[in-house]
Image (tube, rainbow, N blue to C red; front, side):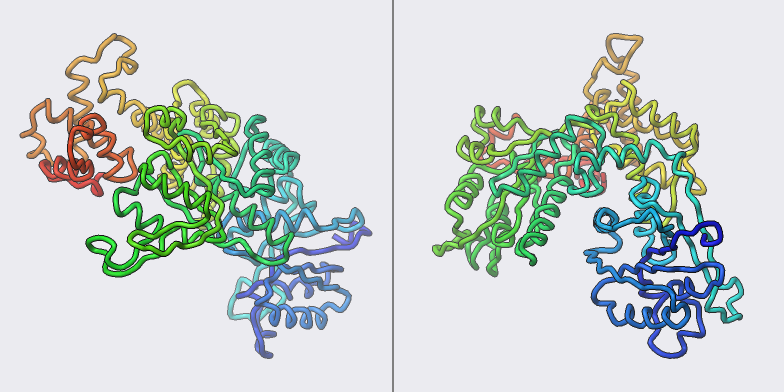
Length: 560
């Protein structure tokens, strides 16, 4: 680079905790990527910026000394980074984004981004930041001599000049996020929707300025749990930056749909030994665990009235009594709740306490469904490809034609996205898993379109909906029977299937679909027995469903 430019040259990269390692003289007999940058006559590095954690301070000092020996004119500058998990995409991206945003890039300097060191997740994040224009650099890769038997500390290097004009869509998306201060809620949240950007901006202000309860409302799969986790990360970062130390305790999450009876009380509020049959020892509840932190109660509309009353007391008085105890426990936590129910209607129906709803309703945010954010589909597809690639240490991609085919369907009226972003995540998992050579082609997309269409139509088919038949106002018995058979054949052998009457086959197929679409047996049971359960003295929906499935040799867990 110096041969064609009078600018200085600066290289930015991670300290290679494995490849750069070495604490005795034998380290000079092998290739080390960071040190090798100073061994090439044609590559004159004026500044070497190394990102490292404090625990690697000793190794960093050795690298500084070694670089000074091989390239005295190179100034080595260290930058501390604090990665909670170097394999977590959002954490790494946020840390590197903050580094890039605070770095003083000079027009008189040519920058190279060293991709060889760091995890695969870090390499992906570096790549995205360079593509998006946040880091004005070319990429440089170093590698050892191709013949291992030859000890060559110098190795080889290659400079890669990205043509970012080919990635205008991706760059524009990141610029839009930057303009909306999107980086503060991390990279997991991807949007170009103006209304959603305003929503996130408001949530950002509330999360950093208020400790009042926050209620997130939206359909299943709209991203409530994900957003709750991001809000916690934002609040924690805010506390760290303003107070200089971490005073925000852990993030505690529970899905209230999984809580029932004494179990619900125990899980939330804890119990003392002997509080109920089977309580052989004392237990701290989640409210105690969340003391000083953030408690997220997902699907709070499923919480029982007794638990709602105790939760309200804990919020207002900052204390509660564990089950079976006469001694109160003092707590201080911020509550976040999520629900796909209309809580105002639930209050009118007597299913939710009006006073608790009023307490939760200080900050209420309505999350739109994927169908209302179709402009975000391309960006979310990119995110899912990157996330799955980092998990599998692979690079997945669509062909241009297959990408167009998938997006055309995904944004059409035929794509209902009933499960919202969960459907999209599942779809991308299937596409990347089944793709040959990690390339998603037209045949893969066409098969996935058929799969999604079938999945979205199936509940309607079992309910006898006429929306599936474009030629007829009603479904004939042959269509219904065939639909049931297609489901049951997955779980029953032909001999068993032949003994089931058509009436039972349709009913069983419907029950299986309900089980598949609910998180647990209790939730599926409540849905299936919603009307008859009130007539029983001691309703146990989960047990009723378990016994029904047992008649056909099935178990709930085996249907997932």
